[in-house]
Amino acid sequence: MDQTSPMPVRDDKADSQDAGASAGNANRLPPNKPNPAELDRDILRKQRIIAGFDPCQYVDTYKVLRTRVLQKMRERGWNTLAVTSPDANAGKTVAAINLAISLASEVNQTVLLVDANLRNPNVHQCLGLSPKLGLADHLLDQIEIGKMLLQPKGIGQLSILPGNRPTINSAELLSSPQMARLVEHLKQQDTSRILVFDLPHLRTPDTLAFAPLVDAVLLVIEAGVTTDESLRSAVEHLQGVPIIGTLLNKSEPVA
Image (tube, rainbow, N blue to C red):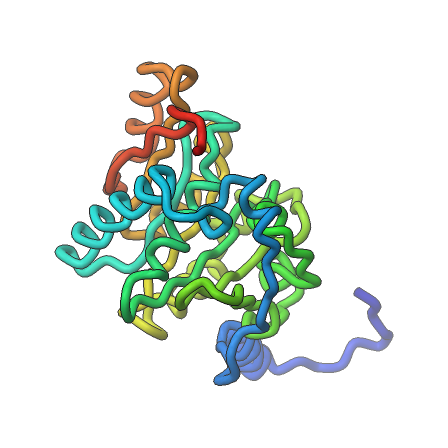
């Protein structure tokens, strides 16, 4: 940051109030709707996103998961859910997207999918989107959240807060006071809306830093790859954070 000399006398109290007001404005979502986003059905199918499929067993799997997740969250008054996996490449991002889409297809259920994988954001790529702004721009540059929200056409009441660029200090950003304020703001803004956060796998410090901010975690397990030891380790690392369930992924070919 450029500085001039001599330095003016600063009113620390006033600066603190201005900073607080600035952070509050950055978190505030404007009344206008999110930016509409066109999706390519062929890309969705290639990426195993259920919005690209006709009714089939693969789609039904996520409907069953949706029902179970909704029942547990509504019973406990929860509205925030993180999706992660014990190891890399388990397909957790696809699972997070598909669960969010299925939840948003429920009557009168609004959903916000947040790409909180700051070290390797991938939600937009799975959907074939190229956002100019993402979560990192809010955390690093205080860009208003409302400017980066997307609303895919034809997918119920789903909005997306995308990522768009990897960040170096991802764990520190996810555990920052600014991130905590954002999550709390999103939770309180609409308590009936479900927030789904796509997080890195548990072999990174990122998820452990962020997990205390959500009500529950869904663990995605890769069939034939995730070991019992990895699963036990994941559960131990998440001690204190409710695990709403597990999803066995890649167990069958998609019809």
